[in-house]
Image 1 (cartoon, rainbow over the protein chains, first blue to last red):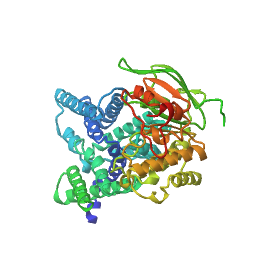
Image 2 (cartoon, rainbow over the protein chains, first blue to last red):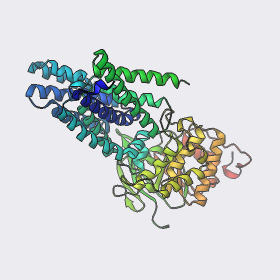
Image 3 (cartoon, each protein chain N blue to C red):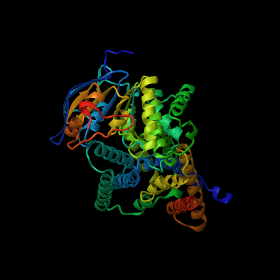
Image 4 (cartoon, one colour):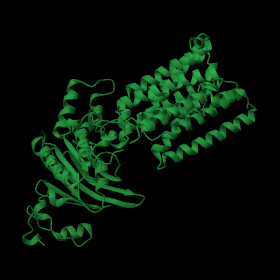
Length: 265
Length: 260
């Protein structure tokens, strides 16, 4: 077991994995309770446009992904709050649209290579020290914002209109939430991959909800599930030479099935 | 308490949605300590009026003041408690205890960076005690009965220490026994706590003894200053567009010109 920690790249992978698990599960609690689960998938695909532009134009794909994910998160929230459109329909349109855009950018630039593949499915074992610093700095900021506004966000998740009538700045906080989620997703796709980050954001919360406990306990269980999945998934992937992102996602799905069975009415 | 400035001062308020007039030239004032019932047919504009009073809908024309201030300048929303129509129809899977829900009523009052003080805890417990749900504080809201959920939502509204409580058909999905208990609670809040109460109902017979004024809304507003005498079968028939009959019971005898 300790042998796995002897390598620098594994130590970095564990730290990055735990940071992403913490950020994804805590932000995921609000996203799931707002019935906005598809947001994470949509922003992950939007971030892929940034990755494609970054790879083709020669910029740092992570930074371009952050900018593009932020743009799409604000566009989604603007469309949702200003037009009488169904939220899931908006998400579906932007999900397919951004994926199409990413594919076109990549094919025009001839950048369909291993780099893009690692952003699609993640590459937790190739996390650099620079990646770790970026994730820690922006992740701490995102986590701080979520924890400071957790009471208000919880109220909005419960009843947006009543929260608004109570004097909560609902529009501002909704924009803030999607902004934080966009940053978390853009930071995570290098590690878990744009096709898999949605699972780490949504499934731990859905599994925790099966225990029917209060809000704080739900968030705590969700965090434990995400951390355990990362730990178990990475150890398994190391010893059996499996892709780490996919192993993490299958671990969290196993926990979800386990939660369903033991909490069956 | 200032009796001269109305809590709500509505002048010539109109609301149209895609060229359909929902409300036309509504003017009314609501003062401290009043207990007002709003009745009218479905689609008549009752909920729209309430939503405009709460700033959730912008009127097409007219003027609306809250506590003497134009609604665009009004910031003290904690003075207004709101219980929506679907109050008792909560998502059964939502991870919140009764106490979590009631605490929400204090959030806007104590600000972003402040924690939950001893005073806040006291106010939340008082609100639960008044609604007789203190013993349920650790229970998940999804496991409560319709009546218990309804009282939880009112406790949440009370936790902000409101001066006015607005309820939009709060009895949806609540059994008869809980409804009676609910009306007694509202009357108590109005008489003992001096909270102004405004609520939409179809249950006018039950509350006629308690309310101070009755507003009938069907695109336009008619204000009855003495609801017990003003309500007649004819008025009700005109309002709802049906042949209305009053049925006498042990509490509300139908007699005189208005009796049927």
